[in-house]
Image (cartoon, rainbow, N blue to C red; front, side, top):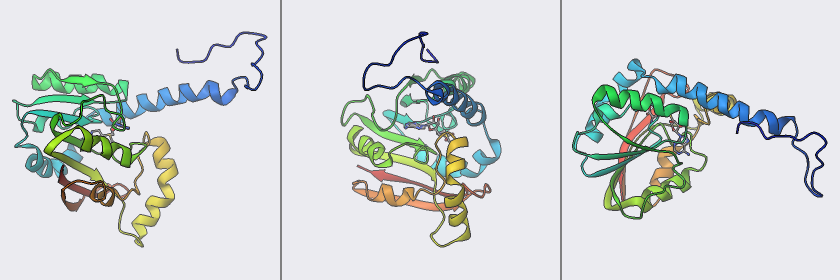
Length: 232
Ligand SMILES: C[S@@+](CC[C@H](N)C(=O)[O-])C[C@H]1O[C@@H](n2cnc3c(N)ncnc32)[C@H](O)[C@@H]1O
Protein backbone atom coordinates (compact mmCIF):
# COMPACT_ATOMS: atom_id res chain seq x y z
CA UNK A 1 0.00 0.00 0.00
CA UNK A 2 1.44 3.34 -1.01
CA UNK A 3 -0.35 5.61 1.48
CA UNK A 4 -1.24 4.92 5.13
CA UNK A 5 -5.03 4.62 5.33
CA UNK A 6 -6.69 7.29 7.51
CA UNK A 7 -10.09 6.66 9.08
CA UNK A 8 -12.22 9.79 9.49
CA UNK A 9 -12.47 10.74 13.15
CA UNK A 10 -9.69 8.33 14.21
CA UNK A 11 -7.94 9.38 17.40
CA UNK A 12 -4.27 8.57 17.84
CA UNK A 13 -3.65 6.13 20.73
CA UNK A 14 -2.22 7.90 23.81
CA UNK A 15 1.43 8.76 23.29
CA UNK A 16 1.21 8.46 19.49
CA UNK A 17 0.58 11.16 16.95
CA UNK A 18 -1.70 11.04 13.94
CA UNK A 19 0.03 10.77 10.55
CA UNK A 20 0.86 14.24 9.24
CA UNK A 21 1.43 15.61 5.75
CA UNK A 22 5.03 14.37 5.75
CA UNK A 23 3.93 10.80 6.57
CA UNK A 24 1.56 10.91 3.63
CA UNK A 25 3.94 12.43 1.12
CA UNK A 26 7.17 10.57 2.03
CA UNK A 27 6.26 7.12 0.67
CA UNK A 28 5.00 8.72 -2.53
CA UNK A 29 8.14 10.84 -2.87
CA UNK A 30 10.36 7.79 -2.25
CA UNK A 31 8.41 5.83 -4.85
CA UNK A 32 8.93 8.60 -7.42
CA UNK A 33 12.64 8.90 -6.64
CA UNK A 34 13.16 5.14 -7.03
CA UNK A 35 11.32 5.19 -10.34
CA UNK A 36 13.27 8.23 -11.50
CA UNK A 37 16.58 6.58 -10.52
CA UNK A 38 15.68 3.38 -12.36
CA UNK A 39 14.75 5.35 -15.46
CA UNK A 40 18.02 7.28 -15.53
CA UNK A 41 20.47 4.73 -14.13
CA UNK A 42 18.81 1.57 -15.42
CA UNK A 43 19.52 2.33 -19.06
CA UNK A 44 22.99 1.97 -20.52
CA UNK A 45 25.38 4.92 -20.54
CA UNK A 46 27.68 4.03 -23.42
CA UNK A 47 30.02 7.01 -22.93
CA UNK A 48 30.68 6.17 -19.29
CA UNK A 49 30.86 2.45 -19.99
CA UNK A 50 33.54 2.91 -22.65
CA UNK A 51 35.80 4.58 -20.03
CA UNK A 52 35.33 1.97 -17.31
CA UNK A 53 35.29 -1.02 -19.67
CA UNK A 54 39.07 -1.72 -19.57
CA UNK A 55 39.02 -1.79 -15.75
CA UNK A 56 35.95 -4.03 -15.64
CA UNK A 57 37.40 -6.42 -18.25
CA UNK A 58 40.58 -6.79 -16.22
CA UNK A 59 38.68 -7.37 -12.97
CA UNK A 60 35.86 -9.60 -14.18
CA UNK A 61 37.38 -11.74 -16.93
CA UNK A 62 38.64 -14.56 -14.69
CA UNK A 63 35.64 -14.80 -12.37
CA UNK A 64 34.52 -18.32 -11.56
CA UNK A 65 32.06 -20.18 -9.33
CA UNK A 66 29.47 -18.32 -7.22
CA UNK A 67 29.43 -14.59 -7.81
CA UNK A 68 27.25 -12.18 -5.86
CA UNK A 69 26.68 -8.66 -7.15
CA UNK A 70 25.33 -5.95 -4.85
CA UNK A 71 23.30 -3.14 -6.42
CA UNK A 72 23.57 -4.38 -10.02
CA UNK A 73 21.10 -1.70 -11.19
CA UNK A 74 20.24 -2.17 -14.84
CA UNK A 75 22.84 -4.90 -15.31
CA UNK A 76 25.72 -2.83 -16.70
CA UNK A 77 28.20 -5.52 -15.63
CA UNK A 78 26.46 -8.58 -17.05
CA UNK A 79 28.17 -8.30 -20.43
CA UNK A 80 31.61 -8.59 -18.81
CA UNK A 81 31.05 -11.85 -16.96
CA UNK A 82 32.32 -15.24 -18.12
CA UNK A 83 29.35 -17.43 -19.11
CA UNK A 84 30.12 -20.26 -16.69
CA UNK A 85 29.69 -18.33 -13.40
CA UNK A 86 26.64 -18.72 -11.14
CA UNK A 87 25.49 -15.13 -10.65
CA UNK A 88 23.08 -13.74 -8.05
CA UNK A 89 22.21 -10.06 -7.88
CA UNK A 90 20.84 -8.22 -4.85
CA UNK A 91 19.08 -5.05 -5.98
CA UNK A 92 16.88 -3.04 -3.59
CA UNK A 93 15.16 -0.82 -6.17
CA UNK A 94 12.32 -2.90 -7.65
CA UNK A 95 12.01 -0.53 -10.62
CA UNK A 96 15.55 -1.47 -11.69
CA UNK A 97 14.66 -5.12 -12.09
CA UNK A 98 12.99 -4.80 -15.48
CA UNK A 99 16.07 -3.02 -16.92
CA UNK A 100 18.34 -5.76 -15.61
CA UNK A 101 16.07 -8.48 -16.97
CA UNK A 102 15.98 -6.73 -20.36
CA UNK A 103 19.78 -6.55 -20.46
CA UNK A 104 20.02 -10.20 -19.37
CA UNK A 105 17.54 -11.16 -22.10
CA UNK A 106 19.61 -9.30 -24.70
CA UNK A 107 22.65 -11.32 -23.59
CA UNK A 108 20.73 -14.60 -23.40
CA UNK A 109 21.17 -14.91 -19.62
CA UNK A 110 18.71 -15.95 -16.94
CA UNK A 111 19.94 -14.18 -13.83
CA UNK A 112 18.85 -14.83 -10.26
CA UNK A 113 17.78 -11.45 -9.02
CA UNK A 114 16.79 -10.79 -5.40
CA UNK A 115 15.59 -7.80 -3.44
CA UNK A 116 17.62 -6.73 -0.45
CA UNK A 117 20.39 -4.43 0.68
CA UNK A 118 24.14 -4.85 0.92
CA UNK A 119 24.07 -4.11 4.65
CA UNK A 120 21.98 -7.26 5.35
CA UNK A 121 22.61 -10.00 2.82
CA UNK A 122 20.43 -13.06 3.00
CA UNK A 123 23.42 -15.22 2.05
CA UNK A 124 25.28 -17.82 4.19
CA UNK A 125 28.72 -17.11 5.66
CA UNK A 126 31.78 -18.10 3.57
CA UNK A 127 29.67 -19.05 0.56
CA UNK A 128 30.65 -16.95 -2.48
CA UNK A 129 33.83 -16.96 -4.53
CA UNK A 130 33.59 -13.31 -5.50
CA UNK A 131 31.47 -10.29 -4.75
CA UNK A 132 31.09 -7.44 -7.21
CA UNK A 133 29.96 -3.88 -6.53
CA UNK A 134 30.19 -1.00 -8.99
CA UNK A 135 28.96 2.50 -8.10
CA UNK A 136 27.23 1.09 -5.04
CA UNK A 137 29.22 2.15 -1.98
CA UNK A 138 28.41 5.77 -2.85
CA UNK A 139 24.74 4.95 -2.22
CA UNK A 140 24.52 2.42 0.61
CA UNK A 141 23.34 3.92 3.89
CA UNK A 142 26.19 2.30 5.89
CA UNK A 143 29.47 1.53 4.10
CA UNK A 144 31.07 -0.27 7.07
CA UNK A 145 28.04 -2.52 7.54
CA UNK A 146 27.99 -3.35 3.81
CA UNK A 147 31.70 -4.25 3.88
CA UNK A 148 31.22 -6.40 6.99
CA UNK A 149 28.63 -8.32 4.99
CA UNK A 150 31.00 -8.60 2.01
CA UNK A 151 33.61 -10.14 4.30
CA UNK A 152 31.08 -12.43 5.96
CA UNK A 153 29.71 -13.97 2.75
CA UNK A 154 33.03 -14.34 0.90
CA UNK A 155 34.83 -17.68 1.15
CA UNK A 156 38.32 -17.43 2.70
CA UNK A 157 40.52 -16.14 -0.11
CA UNK A 158 37.42 -14.87 -1.97
CA UNK A 159 37.65 -11.58 -3.83
CA UNK A 160 35.69 -8.36 -3.61
CA UNK A 161 35.87 -6.53 -6.95
CA UNK A 162 34.89 -2.90 -7.11
CA UNK A 163 34.66 0.17 -9.30
CA UNK A 164 33.49 3.21 -7.34
CA UNK A 165 33.39 6.95 -7.74
CA UNK A 166 35.00 8.62 -4.76
CA UNK A 167 35.81 11.91 -3.07
CA UNK A 168 38.40 14.14 -4.70
CA UNK A 169 41.59 14.83 -2.73
CA UNK A 170 41.10 16.95 0.40
CA UNK A 171 41.71 20.66 -0.08
CA UNK A 172 40.91 20.64 -3.80
CA UNK A 173 38.22 22.79 -5.36
CA UNK A 174 36.45 19.65 -6.57
CA UNK A 175 36.30 18.25 -3.02
CA UNK A 176 34.77 21.51 -1.76
CA UNK A 177 32.23 21.33 -4.59
CA UNK A 178 31.44 17.69 -3.75
CA UNK A 179 30.92 18.64 -0.07
CA UNK A 180 28.73 21.59 -0.98
CA UNK A 181 26.52 19.78 -3.47
CA UNK A 182 26.23 16.53 -1.49
CA UNK A 183 22.73 17.10 0.05
CA UNK A 184 21.12 17.97 -3.29
CA UNK A 185 23.08 15.26 -5.16
CA UNK A 186 22.04 12.69 -2.58
CA UNK A 187 18.39 13.69 -2.85
CA UNK A 188 18.24 13.69 -6.63
CA UNK A 189 20.65 10.76 -7.08
CA UNK A 190 18.83 8.16 -4.99
CA UNK A 191 21.18 8.40 -2.00
CA UNK A 192 24.45 8.80 -3.90
CA UNK A 193 27.10 10.78 -1.97
CA UNK A 194 29.93 12.12 -4.16
CA UNK A 195 32.27 13.00 -1.25
CA UNK A 196 32.81 9.56 0.28
CA UNK A 197 36.39 8.42 0.80
CA UNK A 198 35.48 4.88 -0.20
CA UNK A 199 39.03 3.66 -0.94
CA UNK A 200 40.09 4.39 2.67
CA UNK A 201 36.96 2.71 4.04
CA UNK A 202 37.68 -0.45 2.02
CA UNK A 203 41.31 -0.41 3.21
CA UNK A 204 40.17 -0.28 6.85
CA UNK A 205 37.44 -2.92 6.51
CA UNK A 206 39.59 -5.92 7.49
CA UNK A 207 40.50 -7.59 4.16
CA UNK A 208 43.82 -9.45 4.05
CA UNK A 209 44.86 -7.34 1.06
CA UNK A 210 43.44 -4.38 -0.86
CA UNK A 211 44.71 -3.13 -4.20
CA UNK A 212 43.20 -0.43 -6.38
CA UNK A 213 44.05 2.19 -8.93
CA UNK A 214 42.69 5.69 -9.35
CA UNK A 215 41.36 7.11 -12.59
CA UNK A 216 39.00 9.83 -13.65
CA UNK A 217 35.98 9.99 -15.91
CA UNK A 218 34.62 13.08 -17.61
CA UNK A 219 31.67 13.67 -15.25
CA UNK A 220 33.16 16.27 -12.94
CA UNK A 221 31.39 15.84 -9.57
CA UNK A 222 31.57 12.05 -9.73
CA UNK A 223 34.76 12.06 -11.81
CA UNK A 224 37.36 10.58 -9.42
CA UNK A 225 37.15 6.78 -9.49
CA UNK A 226 38.86 3.76 -8.01
CA UNK A 227 38.90 0.22 -9.43
CA UNK A 228 40.42 -2.74 -7.70
CA UNK A 229 40.11 -5.84 -5.60
CA UNK A 230 40.24 -6.84 -1.98
CA UNK A 231 40.91 -10.39 -0.76
CA UNK A 232 39.26 -11.89 2.32
C1 LIG B 1 24.52 4.24 -9.42
S1 LIG B 1 23.63 2.74 -9.38
C2 LIG B 1 24.83 1.61 -10.03
C3 LIG B 1 24.22 0.43 -10.71
C4 LIG B 1 25.22 -0.58 -11.29
N1 LIG B 1 25.97 -1.22 -10.25
C5 LIG B 1 26.14 0.08 -12.29
O1 LIG B 1 27.36 0.06 -12.09
O2 LIG B 1 25.62 0.59 -13.29
C6 LIG B 1 23.58 2.33 -7.66
C7 LIG B 1 22.85 1.04 -7.41
O3 LIG B 1 23.00 0.68 -6.03
C8 LIG B 1 21.73 0.27 -5.55
N2 LIG B 1 21.73 0.45 -4.10
C9 LIG B 1 21.45 1.55 -3.38
N3 LIG B 1 21.53 1.30 -2.07
C10 LIG B 1 21.86 0.01 -1.94
C11 LIG B 1 22.08 -0.86 -0.83
N4 LIG B 1 21.98 -0.43 0.42
N5 LIG B 1 22.39 -2.16 -1.08
C12 LIG B 1 22.51 -2.61 -2.35
N6 LIG B 1 22.32 -1.84 -3.44
C13 LIG B 1 22.00 -0.55 -3.24
C14 LIG B 1 20.75 1.16 -6.28
O4 LIG B 1 19.43 0.68 -6.23
C15 LIG B 1 21.35 1.16 -7.67
O5 LIG B 1 20.93 0.06 -8.41
